[in-house]
Structure formats: structure tokens, C-alpha cells
Image (cartoon, rainbow, N blue to C red; front, side, top):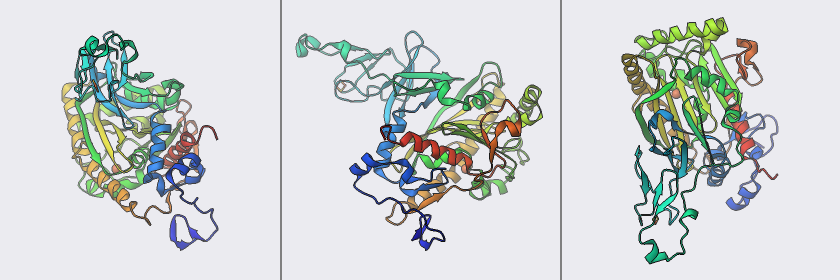
Length: 451
Ligand code: FES
Ligand SMILES: [Fe+2]
């Protein structure tokens, strides 16, 4: 028998062989996520990142069910302002309607499917489909049909042909989420203990946060789960992948001092103690501000709370990630565009009440580090693409990825940091505990609900 992590090498102990591949249709019907990963998330089948049938099933069971991040409410400053994005691969319009209520609609005409809105953002009194000009209100109703009486007589009931509306849209701290699942839990329940840490990140100053500089969009040839699990807390890659940036003084050398926290439902955060950017050659004024925020949190929760400003990296399952460092804060979504491609949407997020010169400093640091041309962004994108390239062949897709670092060393966060801090926590920074939590939840969501 061969070792599933390395098929060329004989295993030292017998392992269960991987299930044989059968036709895509049969496999969808019989797919049990547990067959594709170890129960504790410590090994994941390479086919999860390249298999079309798995990808289609993710669209149904993850992207049409989970709460997904759409954008920040500061991008919708007035009634009838809107932006377009996607939920999985489904295009949606996110709009603040005439009454100020946040709504989301499938961006596809109820006549014959064309996108009724073809721009990124703006304000609109209505959305007019470019194909045959059916026109919809910002509440999704079909309000005009050209030549309706001449071509339909009285047979077309406009009230039955509005835009398809996403049933649940809600916000947390300015972050807009939505779910297609009519039976979805509340957003607050979905976020669970992650809400506590998001609140630490989003409520540092009165007035909350806002997005500055618009949204950056670019594509990377990689499966969406690779960046999602990286931002969940892959600190181990920093000294090697980002070695050049460290050498040049863009950030400090990584130590193993910090946390990886799993907050349930596949969400997690991870941070070096005191933030990623301390001790570098180019300090910024923002670091001084973060120090002040740190002392305020320590005054509220005690000494150990200094670890939570900034909060670090994190992933909200499935595909929303953030990076809150001592120099800037970024939000991003890894939108799937096929099994081997993503479209990244990325924003720089600041505290609204921050002085303008600090906002500019933060935006500059965001662009240098994690904008589309940012030094760390380029490092990551290149490596992720190389992972996907290596999985394309017949041999490369065999075997399993390895997530056993720090296995069995989790404790509760409150034991390590004190009572208010929820979740499970690892006793070191370099661990794959967050990735294991991501894939354990992935397996739960992907499992056939009827089996
Ligand atoms: S597809 Fe929109 S009006 Fe025909
Ligand atoms: Fe990275």
C-alpha cells in the first residue's frame, strides 16, 4: 500500500485507501466529504482543489447556503445607491432601496437572463435591462415592459416577474452579509464567537469603520480554498514566502509568539503578539495610534488583552478574509470563478473618526503591502498559483495535503487570555489548527443533508 500523502512512497503503517473516482454524476450523488479528508481536518484530498464535481457541489451547499460577505455599508451612502458583486458565481446587485433598507437581488433579468446592471457601483432610480429593456425598481419590482399591451395583450402579470431577491441580508459592524438559504440561522448566530473578535476590530473608535479608495479587483489562477485557509492563520509561510520583504525591513521576522483561535462554524483568527509590523525600519504614525488602542483594551480587559490590537488575519467561512495589522486593515473576498480561478475583491478599511492624514498613511501602507501590486500580495499570489499548477496533471491530483502541525495542542482561549475571550486556542502561533477547523466545518456543510 502507498502513502496517500506521497503515493510513490510505501507507507509505514497501513492507511485506508482513497475512494476510487467514478463518473462525476455518480460521485455527486454519493459524495461523502468525510471520504475526502481526515475527520479531524489534518489531511485533505488534493481532488478538493481541482475536481469539477466537488466545485459544483460547493456552489450548491456552500455558496447558496452560507452567509457571504457582500461589502461595506459605507459603499452605500444614500438611498438608491448600489454596487454589484457575486455570491459564489451568482451575480447580485446590492442596493439601499428608496426607504433605506439594504436588499440584494440576482443580477439577471426575469425575461431571458441578461444582467440588468453592468457597472460596479453608483446610484439609480431603476435598473433597465439592456437586452429588451424590461425595467426594475430598486425594490426589485418589474415596473416597465416596452410595448406591453401590443406584444402581450393582458397576459403578462408584472407582479410575478420581479428580480429574484436574496432572502436574508444583514449587517454586523458595517459589514454587509447575505444568504440565499431561506432557513439560514441569523447572521449573529452564524458568526458565533467570531462576532466578539470582529467587534474588537470594528469598534475601536466611535463612529465605526469605512472603506476608503474603492474596491480593487484582480484574478488569480487558484482554487478559492487555498487563500481562504491561508488567511485563516498560516503564519508558517511568512519567513519563507515573504522572506524578501522581511530582509528589506517591510516587516519584522516572525516569532512563534502569538495565537491561532478557532471561533466555531469554520471561522478563525491568528496574530503575532503585538502585531505583524513592529520593529521594522519604517514605522508609521498609525502604529502610535494602535498603541493607544492597545492600552485602552488592556484597561478594559487586563494585561493579556494587548494581544488583540491589532487582531491579525482571519477568515469568516467560507471566503471572506481580513488582515488587521499595526499599519493597515484590509478586507477581501475570494470569489470563486471556476475550480481553478478566483476574483479577489479587496478594500482598505479605516476607523471613520481617524484624522485624514492617518487615513492616507494607512491607505499607502495597504497599497504597498496588500494592494494588487503589493509586495506581500504578489508573494502570496505567485505561490498560490504554483500550487494550482502542480495539481493539474493526472499524478499531481493524487494524495493528500498535510495539516498536522500543532495537532492536539488546542486549549480554550479563556484559559490562555482570560474569561472574555471565546473560542479554542493554540499555544503557539505556528500551527495548522485554524485550517483543520476550516476543513472540519467544510466537511459538515458539504455532507449530504439527507444521509
Ligand atoms: S433579457 Fe432582459 S428584457 Fe429581455
Ligand atoms: Fe502571505
